[in-house]
Image (cartoon, rainbow, N blue to C red; front, top):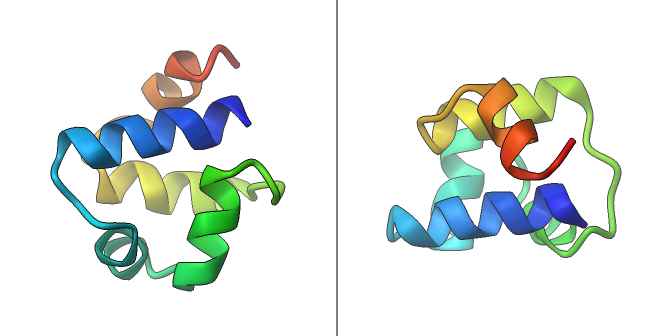
Length: 67
């Protein structure tokens, strides 16, 4: 849940829609929504894809999530 909230906050700060972020990260839009809502466990590969898409280091994204 915390990771999803961190992703959502960064996405909104960048002015991206959930669909746009999903496209940039090469993740299905519905899966991205589930990640943001904390309904899915996130693989390391997807963490890296999301971090790249929102222009942040994966370690910083995890830190922002308190992980």
